[in-house]
Image (tube, rainbow, N blue to C red; front, top):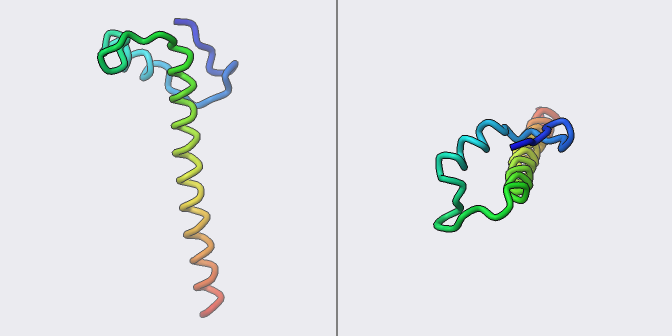
Length: 72
């Protein structure tokens, strides 16, 4: 498997990706994986979505804190 993290510019842990699917005999459910590159893109999207959600929560909390601070 030849994946270049710098080339894709993502934060996917490729060793974890490889180990995960290797342990599952490269299957998704009962079906053999057809396209590992598509699976990497899915991991990228999930990672981005999680980061966005965390940022949104943090922004919300900071905003609420600033509003509370102004009231005092």
